[in-house]
Structure formats: C-alpha cells, structure tokens
Image (cartoon, rainbow, N blue to C red):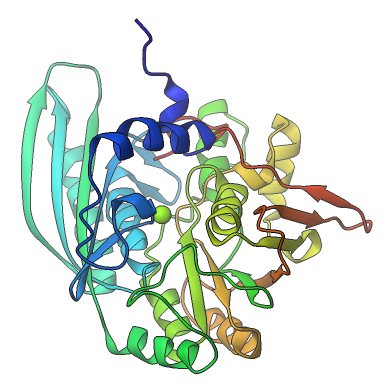
Length: 349
Ligand code: MG
C-alpha cells in the first residue's frame, strides 16, 4: 500500500496535487461565500467573516526571533489578513508530550498572547491533549477574521477601475498591468532555522521574520487598489508567485534586483546551495495592486513596523493564460521561476 510522502506537507507542487486528489474529491465545496474550499485560498469566507486553520510542528520550537507560539498565532493571523480580513478570534489546540517543561509551555503561551495583542485579536477557546509520542509540542490554531472599513474602502477603489468578484481579497484575481509588491526581505525565517540547526554561525545576526501582517495589510487597504494577496510561507516567494499567476491565468515578470534579501540570508543560501526564492518567510506578503496606486501603497507599507523594506518587484503582463513567472535577472537575462516541489528546509512551520 502506498504511504503518504513527506513532500505533501511541504507546501509545493506535491501538496497541490494532494489537495486535488484527496481533499477536493472527498468534500463538496458548499460555498457559503465567494471563496470556498475549492479555491484553496488562504481562508474561506462566510457572510461578514473568513475562517482558516493551521497546524504547527516547527523544530526547534524556540528559534532566533520567535517560538512555536508566536509562529502559530502569526501563521493564522496572516492567512486571515491576506484576505483583507481583520483578525478577531483564534481557537487553539495544544498537543503536548508528557514531561514537557512547564516553564517552556508558559513561554509559548505568553508568545501567543503577545502576538494576539499586537493585532487586537483574542483567544476564544481551545483544547489540550498530552501524548507519549516524542513531539515536544504541536500547536494548531484556527482563526476568524471580519469584513472592515479598510477592506470596504479598498474594494471601492478597485471597483472604480475594474470588476472584482469577491467581498474579500482573492488570490486568483490579478489582471495584466497590475504591479506586484513584496512587503519585505525574503527567506529570513527558513534560513534562520537552518542556520540554527546546522550551526552556520548566522544566529547572532539573523532572526526569523515571524510577525503578524495585519498592520501591513491594513496600511495597504487604506490607500486602496489591492487586487490580490498571499502570505509567503512554505515554498517561498516562488510558490506564492506561481500560485497567483496560475490561478489568475496571467504571466508575471519579476525583477531580480528589486527583490529585498538580507546579506546574511543570501550568503547562507549560497553556502548551502539553496534557492533563495524557495525559502520560507513567516511575516511577508505578496500583494497585487492597481498600477496608479502601487507607489503610494509601498510608501504606506514602509511606514509600518514590519514593512520597512517593501518593494515593487514586478508586474502582471499580457497573458497566454499559462501562469508563468519570469525572472528578469540582474545581467539582463530571463529565467522561468518554476513552482517548487516544496520547501527545501523541512519543519519550518
Ligand atoms: Mg497563506
């Protein structure tokens, strides 16, 4: 009998195939709003709300810049935020190994509480199980976000230029001519974990970017013109761009020299032979914006705590419907940025 391979949990092409072959063939998409199960978006909407859920199994559970508690809250908050939804409530399931130090649990819970406070969301309910399996701790978080005045303003701006099919922000909604923004440096999370695991010595200067994206997203929505959004997680920038392009049926041009990458992150990827575009982030989003608003949106994002290095990195071009991402290199060449098989660094979230 065929077993489940670790690749399907790595956020790349095999996971997409798994979702189509197992999930979408088993469950009917009884849409309650515009974006449902079969959209495979960051969240799904029902009435004035969106819902999402994420399991977190990161190793090690404490890392430079955060821990599994902050990661669990931010991961969920970010999937709500990139729908344009204001994060309001989280439910959490803790699965803890017998003998896990109480002090560590307290630290993780405090990280969760602090991350929730940053965006004004609350923990509404939860569940705790203790097992003998050697897992340390797994944290699963479900979240609910709601329609808000910033999203309403944004949709008003977008609809004065083009049609828009949803009441929240989708990821299959890019049109030619729109600009692509990344909200900051890429690869920080994956490389800081890898560096810690492999003792590369970057731990002192390199930290995970695990942060809640709602303030960044809110600043963009306030300007208006946002047409599509996804947070960059497993599979990195490449996965997100490829999903946006394929789902929207457009091609995207990306300019290598515009993509913000920290010096230490670039050095580490070169040392390890990793593709920087496939490394996980935990506090960055890719945003599609109407061209006339792109510069103003970047300025607004740069004014927020976690958006200081936002850049316009590319644009949506006229399409053959193939969903290609084309990287324009520094030296003037072109290469196809293929969707990754998964994240090359395992258990990053
Ligand atoms: Mg997401």
